[in-house]
Picture 1 (spheres, protein in one colour):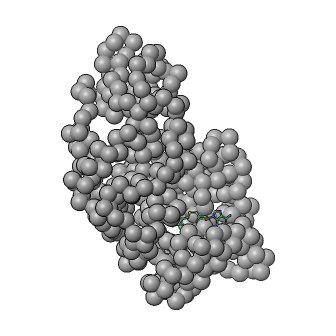
Picture 2 (cartoon, helix red, strand yellow; picture 1 turned 60 degrees about the horizontal axis):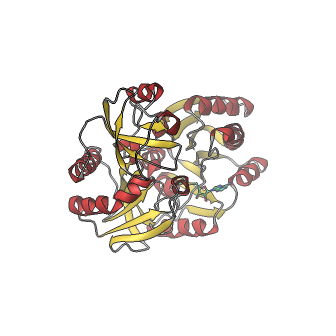
Picture 3 (cartoon, rainbow, N blue to C red; picture 1 turned 45 degrees about the vertical axis):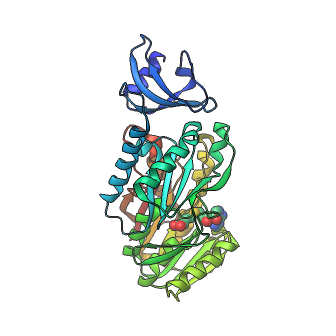
Amino acid sequence: MTARGERRLRTGHPWIYRSDLRRVAAGPGDVVQVSGGDRRPLGYGLYSSRSVIALRMLTRRDARPGAAFWRARLEAAIRYRESLDIDSTAYRLVHGEGDRLPGLVVDRYGDALVVQALTQATDRLLPLIGELLVELLQPAGILARNDPQVRALEGLDRSVELRHGSVPPEIEVREGAIRHVVDPWQGQKTGLFLDQRENRLAAARYARGRAFDGFSYTGGFALQMAPACDEVETVDVSESVAAAVTRNAERNGAANVRSRAANVFDALRDHDRKGERFDTIVLDPPAFAKNRGAAPRALAGYKEINLRALRILSPGGTLLTSSCSYHVDEPAFARMLAEAAADARADVRVVERRLQSRDHPVLATAPETSYLKCVVLRRM
Ligand code: SAH
């Protein structure tokens, strides 16, 4: 390891780039011992032969991690969730680096688990991790949703396969008072956007009057808000998603939810042109910036939808607006919102600044683990 690599390790960041490795005697996905320039042992990490992130540190201790190590890390992740009093049967049990389990995701949907191995090492370790999850949690089934694009960066193929028991294509889960039907096999991410769970519950506390849920997916925000609203309009570009919103609304007896398949940019422009007004607006777009270079264009997109939303927001109304682009950081997001408010000639207060749900923990020493921003604004 180079001196620069060692300095980085001392900051507590788990990622070491390939350019900071001096000599490598390891194969793809090996658990490797890491040592400094003077051969002093620095701990153990997970090696990737392909990613620019060549090493993800696991531990600073000088003992080779075995099954007991992985069991303890998984147990710690499970215990942390138990401590959060999560009022839902769907949540994230393991959030990679945030749980000191780099490259591993485990989501719980009722008694089914969905796992994702995002690095060569976690891919190799998945059989062991599966066994430990069965031992610790006795799930009815484990599905490996190993289809995210990032696996390509690791030279891994993309697949979806059952690893244990059985996992049906429809699982009913509960989030607060709302029930959702989740398809863990084909739904986006692992079925639900679990990182917004607490923000959905927050939206329910602010919701009233006429509401708009932009980028709704299966209606997560809309369903939470519906009991407090006169009517809720959901907009998502996907036709199949709009149908799922309707089914979810029926299941929850929410007769005031209307779903629409449309582009949110167009929908907001139409409402603005027609002088429509809303008392509650949620914007939860997909990541507009997938890399650093895309940040300026992404900010222009965020500004457009937020400006339009503020124009059609009634005085006293609430806008709950999110960005899940890591490359658009909190200060940039706040500046964009200020510009949108100024251009919309709207006086707005910042009521809350929120993050991803607590079951997606942020590792204090790794800023990359904090990606979701959610700001609650109130028009004066
Ligand atoms: N709010 C949702 C998650 C939203 S994910 C929840 O809490 O569950 C983002 C969604 O935006 C996806 O469902 C995607 O289909 C949709 N989408 C992407 N671009 C869009 C656009 N331009 N207009 C409308 N929907 C879009």
